[in-house]
Amino acid sequence: MVYTALMSVDGYIEDRSGRFDWAAPDEEVHRFVNDRERGIGTYLYGRRMYETMRYWQTPQAVESQPPFIRDYAEIWRAADKVVFSQSLDDVSTPHTTLVRDLDPSLIRGLKATSDHDISIGGPTLATHAFRTGLVDQCHLFVSPVAVGGGKPALPPDVQLNLQLVDERRFASGVVHLHYLVTT
Image 1 (cartoon, rainbow, N blue to C red):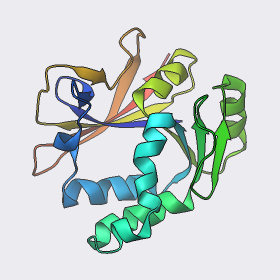
Image 2 (image 1 turned 90 degrees about the horizontal axis):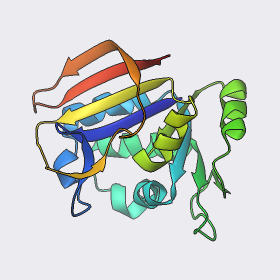
Image 3 (image 1 turned 135 degrees about the vertical axis):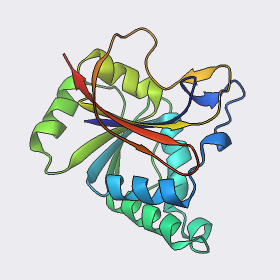
């Protein structure tokens, strides 16, 4: 399973106000993300991340956007989504299943039977997956900004041993770090 996060250089996916506009990828980074996301067959989300990501399902929101933005919307729409939430009554996007509780055996079953990569989105849900050893790799996109606090990209109470397998620097100063999670 793959965990991807756009984060500040001090390790946050959103600042203390809940904002993350400082991490918006430019065209070069977005195209790179698009190419990486093509292999994802299923996205796993918590409620907040799902509510943020369902924007990509809205045709009128993306139809006037540049081709690289529309490309991402197509990638996202084609994938299956599983939303883990006890507070949502239903989901509003196609190819989406609502599950009440994060059951590691369910995710292990998905991993064992999927022909494509599975992505887990959002640090709260990912923390549970990291704790149970379900995350195999991380793609961290580090933005050249320190926000001084907020929601951490990586679980603060889980020791992770990571092996760097690739990195890339973009003209904007964003750095992509690809790690394998080792035991």
